[in-house]
Image 1 (cartoon, rainbow over the protein chains, first blue to last red):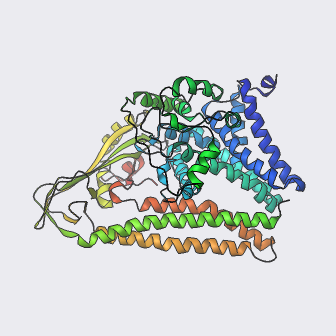
Image 2: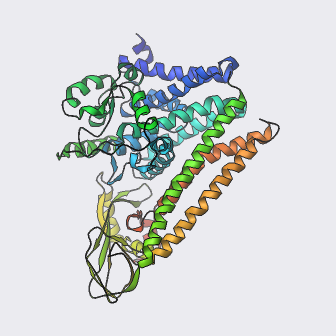
Image 3: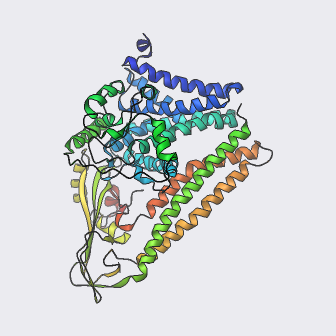
Length: 306
Length: 254
């Protein structure tokens, strides 16, 4: 019923709409109702800002709505949520990150872009490097022939995201800064950080051990199964609701079992708080044919052109 | 309730953590350059005798743009030191060495040539795979070179001067960046708290927060070791047409 009303292709996508609606509700509550300007609402808004970016990621892989126009409108909604044009995900994530390189140069969000000895500093600093590299790369890509529609959409999203945020700042500066801009930037920056969390120390030259998976059930309910990262990389077109089963079937028999982490929180604590140095990069013992990855890359580029 | 004071302090905390991390990362790059300067104390300078001493190359893919140009994108950098004689010193062959070529020579090698070359390349560059090419520069007999270590770095310009100049830029950036952050913070803390001046200060803090990282990344890319410094390059038909024939506009892309 709800699926029909919302016009989403999959029943499970109702959860994505709910996630973004919850985020907007939290922002509006804090902006308009002084009593809501408390740590619980702010923490929830920051968390849902990140989850909205995850929704953005999913929908840029596969339009969520049956209507093309609605998919485009949805991009504005998500762009305001993270204060960046969500369409940037197409070149930066779908075309570059999924293949771990930019035509031979390192992925714009490769963990190696940060190199502090104290590992905690690496995760804190990571968005400061990956963000600008991403936007520089997106701009280079957007100049290429046939990207006219992308450029228009990107500019419109940019104007919408910064325009609406600007209006809120003009109307009530401090409330907008503390209770709208802070959650927006929190979500966008953790969206970048997820790259270092999911790939640091992994061997991105392999087909099955390039990513770390977080397999907690509750975690994946909120994260729309984005914890299952290996299968997402290898089968980018697969709908997120099918990732858990595919992970069990295709990835688990082939991967290094230590790359399945039961809890992201425990992984973060163990890796960034309870130790000083960066864990050593694992060296793959696979010398496999990477033709599958090249085929996927060609397919992704064709899709982007289409 | 989260008061403005608490939120203001938290935001300034995040701002300063970011500013200090950017400074620390810049310091890392500075340290790397100083290591080159130290190693260059035992550098030799001379003229290459007989044959080719070394080669630098970059594999590129060119793709057509909407303004009738081809934008090249660097894929993989290669350096090879064949070995030879510089002055009276014998330089051994070294596969792992770095070949540093001056900017002018790299840009010349990356130029287009003529309209016919451009048109042929453009037809391929319009396809999804793009136009692949390799830009090569050889260090030949008669050229003045600087060599660090036993052929660890072969450069067509003074590497010590280059590293000193770049390290000075990095070192200057750190206090400037921190001073700007301090100025924005000072403005944000103006009395009356959260008044007009304070709002201007907060806007300056946001601008600093959003602007400092792209500047730092640009700076970082500008000090990439010359053997893997981005070449990129754009071939523009318009520039070819206006410049007559052979001399071709080949400008670095961003």
